[in-house]
Amino acid sequence: MLDVSLPLDCATSGRSGVKVASKWPKSGAAASSAGSPGAGLVTIAGFVNAGRSDAALRRLERWHLQSVARRVLVPLGDDWRRLGNCCRARVSMHASIFIRTPPPGSKGSNFYSGLQHCGSAWVCPLCAAKIVEVRRRELDQGFKALRDQGGSWGFLTATFAHIKTDRFADLDARHAAALHHFRNSRAWKSLKGAGGIGGVRTFEVQWGPLNGFHPHDHMLLAFEGATPDGLHGLLYPAWSAALATVGLRCDPERFSVTAAYDAAASYVAKWGQEPLDRPWGIADEVTRGVAKRSKVGVHMGMFDLLRRLDATGESIYHDKFSEYATATKGRHALHWSPGLRARLGLGLAKTDEQIAQGIEQGAGTLGSIDEFWPLIMAKHNQGHLLEASNRAGWDGVLEFIGDLIKREGVRA
Image 1: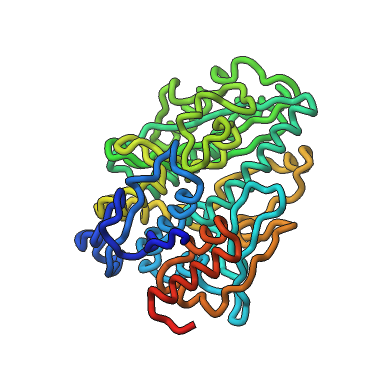
Image 2: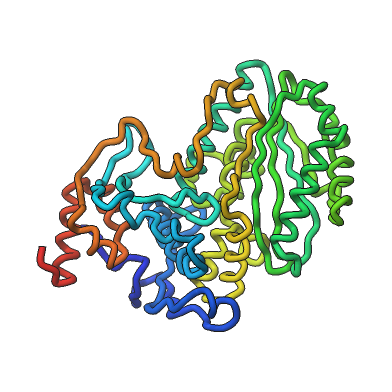
């Protein structure tokens, strides 16, 4: 028999290694916006970790974390309706729901078609996994294309000092203004004369209990030839001056510019929920910020806030995730300089929504689960059903659904 134990998204107890949070606290901001969770939330924090959990558990965790994000954000209003419907509601009233298989030779896993996707890489772990993987592959292709053209990349990280009481929206606004000043500085514009042909910028956010929100930028700088020496000495004063215009500061050691290679050993420790089958590369650093796992008590990624909320029920994690989500809604996380994608042969970029909703060419079909979708949804088995199909194909789907029908006493 297949493992069809109760899903991670519904209440249960007694499973070894599974921590049960009976409810979230009903005080402070969590009381007004979290709603009434009702039955307890099962967490898998106890047996999912950065280096050793298998791919199935990582995929199941994404389904679970999405349910936590929904509980935080959907009660806030219609702005989060797309998240509420993501991977749950059909794309249209009469759309059929299929279990699909990845293209031959792909390392992907089975997935659903016919369902809506919110397309938010900021707050939805399911959409984020798909979006950042496509962005990473594009960036990796661009990285190699420039090298084949005789060019090189520089990797810049720009941060600034902040304190625990800073509100994210205020930091974000001041950061945006400083970035505008920086990119209009003489130092930045002089990169063109040094062979600069553009770049790629991503925005990352972390949070820690000691120093609060930690927004910062990663930038890949593209050069026609070798990466120039002395970039730190050229660009740091410009970044520091730009920050000063908005009342912020940055110590020299918190601003770095280095030559970028395919893989950077210094980022191996930042590998998050992805399999450890290769080193953490520059492309991962630039695209996978939201998926990083971090040490509790230091700088936590935004999905770490959901993990901590689920594990502890503490309202601070609810409030900080909500604050972050509200400020980043509708924004793009990755920005290419005009013309750079075309120069590297990448073509037009798809939107996050197009990537999330899209189906790779060559994907197969196992079958339709239309008539069983209400039961699967009611018991939060979407992720588990996919894992049954990954393990045993359509036979696994039929066995899982049959077992679920027997367990629930539903007539087929």
